[in-house]
Image (cartoon, rainbow, N blue to C red; front, side, top):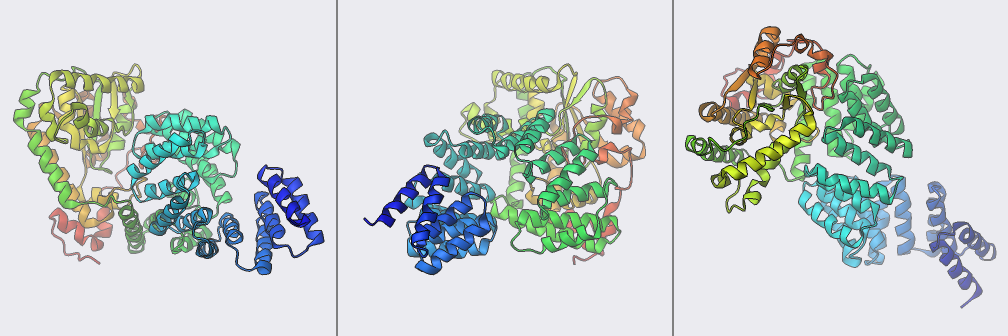
Length: 635
């Protein structure tokens, strides 16, 4: 072995051992004797990359390639540098050439997959990660990346299974722990996710992303102050992490701390000028008069929304933000065009995740609920439930006034507003397994007996008491619980059910105009919205006919026309004495984790009544699906 080869081998040993200064000195010494040695030049480029000097790294590795000619490892490492520079097309080109020359180069397949994933080319990215794992089955980074693809495609159980398998052989890998927590969080298994985020932080205390993810879990659990502290910890560890600033901003907004939220959005935007979440967040504040959007911001959002290399989610978010600005300016045709584009992008996002709305499937689901929760069923279970008035459920279509109703109730000193709880929905999903039933839900309710019902009810009451403390009523304002009122009445025959309703077209249009954090497939298409609304009316008519407990019908238009009279009836229905604070609901200081968080901090207003008429010319499919006549044709 030549002296140069020996020195190069020694330098590489030092490099692999993390003794980077010594390795660099040896590489440079080799180049003093042999200035055209491509391997020393390439490895100096790798050292520059590890030190964050990316431009120097590109120059060195390209020089090595010019001397040596195509080399798979050189190309793979060049792709890694391009990845840190977000030069995605060059990552793809260099990685493809590397694997053409050496097909078993797992790192190159992984880099290719990451670039394709960032370009939202999910199918090809998944294939690239699959190739990396074919040659290196225990490659943890590729496993995490493939799980991330599954996550984006809505294959959440696939992501969970892959990460659970990975954590078994790599329990000390902080990224795996963090990603497994993220998969559980996406599957609404928030309490199960928390230990994984905590373990990721224990393994790597400086892991800013894990701190931020723990904050998201705390927020989902309603532990807002803990959530804020997690985001602040993430920012302390990495002040340049825009995601933590975004998450903190939205949480501060939920708390009504608008000025602090604006500062965090602005910081996120300073760190990442193309940050769609921050731009949309600031636009939301501007709509409510708490920020000023400059023409340059509008131009930036318009340009970004047209970029194919931006994610579907971000582009959709920007179109919704632009739509809100045009709506506020009275340019309703322009506004609707942006809303339409935003919804089309979100529709594609939902399709990629495999959760598109199925009208026929939804009708059949409602048929099954109506068939299972029959008058005979309620006669059979009449004595099974727990005699408690603690639960108050506010239900109805989204955007029908559910947040407003909860805020009025939560302004009463004997009431705790718990927000949108997922417990009832999770209970129904898990019921077949708990009952060891052969049938799914709702057919499995035929196997319910008094003992099972009391156990389920007591578990839920414990959860409500933990949230509500000494409160005499705890409000769960999950709108979709309108699907589960049969189970609610079974568990709690003295529960208070408040049904919020609003003009059908105003309700549906408000859903179409709302960029929900987790997209609901039926809100993305006007005809689907009309279909869903008709099924909502059908199941509510069934509940009114068969439930053995009363339902308070709260009409949004009546509430906004006569706030005090309707509010008094609402409070009385819940078995409470009147308190004037319920009229000053906008002064109540509490976190509101819904799209209406800024609206409920304002006094009652009626400007949203009849809003659909401004857009009537565009609403043909919705009006037809709702069974309403109109001269307006679909554009």
